[in-house]
Image 1 (cartoon, rainbow, N blue to C red):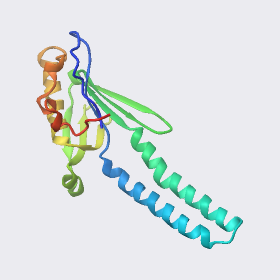
Image 2 (image 1 turned 90 degrees about the horizontal axis):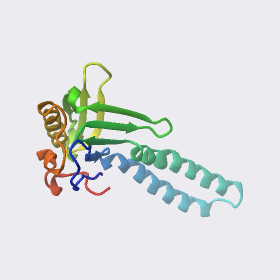
Image 3 (image 1 turned 120 degrees about the vertical axis):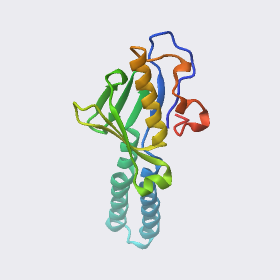
Length: 186
């Protein structure tokens, strides 16, 4: 769920390589809950007496939908990682926004962790450790091995040139083809 920069940029300018979100699998249970609550509520309300019992069923169903479906969806939307030619920017938080940045030139260790469910769906956790701060974890990102390879290339480019390479030719090899990008679209 992201986009890539295709427009040439002047030397020294920073451009977006990829925008990442958690795998869409995180929204399966909230969607199932929404469908189940809507079905149960629609079935139960006509059988209940008019007045407070039917109103209570509608309010309870609405509360379950807001807490179990809407909040997880908004939480998923509010977390994004942006990889640029100079840095990694991680934004998280629904009510309290947290933003962290890691510069490629400062260097960091990139580690990929994948559970059996993540391996089945082609996702994984990418952990970035600088050694100085708390590690940044990009959770459940699609195609984590390609993200890891791209981050290594961006870091190497930043160190070899004394700064990041720029322009479309500077895009890491892992991001060269459109079909290789799991985050095409938004």
